[in-house]
Length: 134
Image 1 (tube, helix red, strand yellow):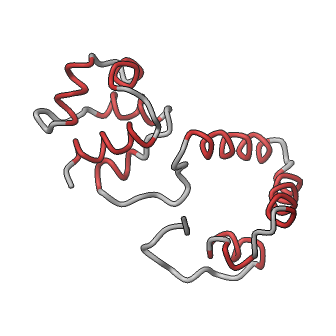
Image 2 (cartoon, helix red, strand yellow):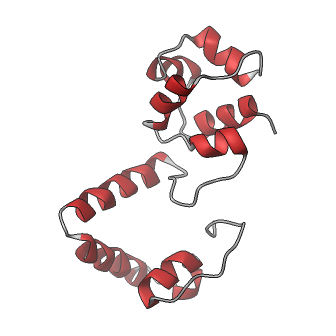
């Protein structure tokens, strides 16, 4: 898969059409189309701007997904709330709230990603290339 194809995949994952996506990156729709069709390669300044939308820029460039990147706009909202809680030393309360949601909705512990399980138990997670469970 090419950089352009991964850029398009990220834009579609975020459910943003070409024009507003391009504008957020400081580009035109025509430039966005050129990026996505591999006619030209996006510059660093553009990538930095679209990263603010939730684009996994590392994935766009390398094809390897970062585990701590939101996969949907809803996940991005959760992630931003968690980061705010952490900056105010409320991270433990946030984790307890998420644990309550998981338990009250009958989601078994074994369905949680290995990284999350390790964070809760203090153990080292097994390295994987798979990322989180869907």
